[in-house]
Image (tube, rainbow, N blue to C red; front, top):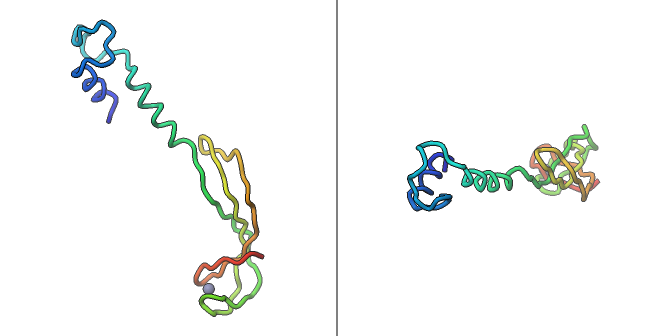
Length: 109
Ligand SMILES: [Zn+2]
């Protein structure tokens, strides 16, 4: 809900009014305390968590246990990552993998 709509909604129900008289305030200029709550809600989306893979270049030639093709696999490093404001602050569970270029099966290398 956009902040303007939220304030109008709040005024309609008499929420967040300092005087308790609802519409005494000139229109469009509120204290926007409801907006602060909205921004607090958005904060949750700024923290991120996920598994990332970084390409390390070509790996060895292997026979895939899943698709049974013999091709050159790709070496990747996989890690779990936690970000704040899109900046990584923690990485753990790092491991090296080789990935089949055809079906995407990953094997620890
Ligand atoms: Zn495969």
